[in-house]
Length: 197
Image (cartoon, rainbow, N blue to C red; front, side, top):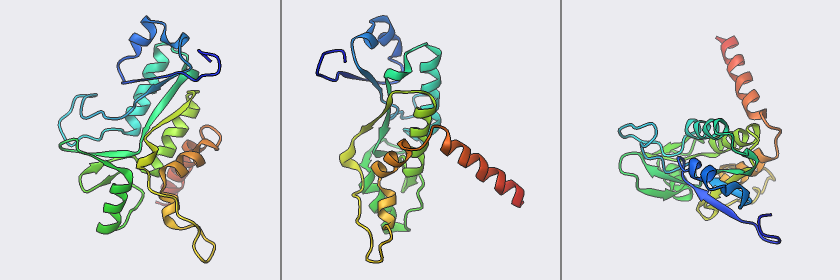
């Protein structure tokens, strides 16, 4: 620990990594939290619709960190538990977005609803896998109070569908898997789909 008996972390926006290196910050903190969200058409520069926290954006950040030679074991990949309107950037919690999806047509586990972009359980699981495969120190969540609540098991003993929609539950499940397992699972699924054609 940078300070005995204390945990010291520093959040940064993508693009501030050079300052971390220049000022020797990694030696003075336990973790740097890379806020891999709120990318409202900034990188790469595009016009709306803007998806503020894609898996591709997180992958780009991780590759950039690796190219700089940073000690990735001290880097936490930031995960958003909220979404943004793809046109104007308005924010809504994941719980609000899930409620909107359920009232409109049901939730299919995707990353968009009513013009809002967010990270659903599958995308967050993939980001946790990315952090694990890249030997990052872990992940950081902003912020857990925006998640959908966990729901107890149904009367028949089966898990309720909403439990599977909790982002924290998805992150926890993915964090307990071996690195690369989700990636191999997706590749096998694609292979099987091609074989069926």
